[in-house]
Amino acid sequence: MSLQFPIADAILHPAYGATRREIIPGLFSDSGDLQRATGALPPFNNVNAYGLRWTFFTVPAGIGRKFGSPDVFDRRMMQLTARYRNVDGDDDDLEVLDVYAEHTWFWREPGPLLIHYEIYPFVEVVFQWLIIKFP
Image 1: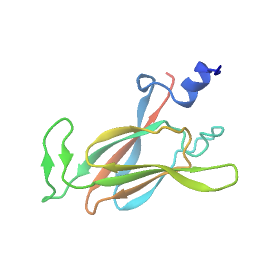
Image 2 (image 1 turned 45 degrees about the vertical axis):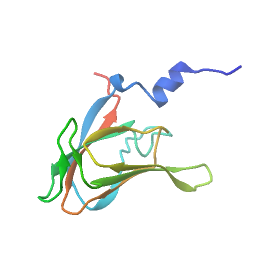
Image 3 (image 1 turned 120 degrees about the horizontal axis):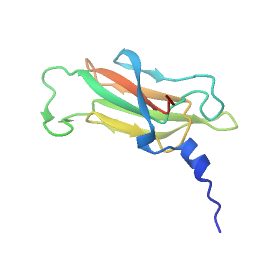
């Protein structure tokens, strides 16, 4: 017998249709970390979001692409990593995503410590959080 907690499941990992996008101000390049600390309780005290959306603002000439929906680039444009911390204070990267196209990422485990990005040289990215925001 297994116990199911549909309300807790919906809070920890809602359906995509229940989310909204929130722009992260600025253009991003090189490498860095994203956090969205809003004062929420754990596990949402560092990244109070359920996922991330990105678009490529600048793509240098010479990077090939296959046109489609979405366009797919001929090289890894970005790598994203979801880092988590356990109760002993150990950090681990539980998800690593190689990005070749504009897309949306809904991480599997709620409440990452941070999202680390490594962006291909001279590429600029616009990020948006996937959040639940009530009207």
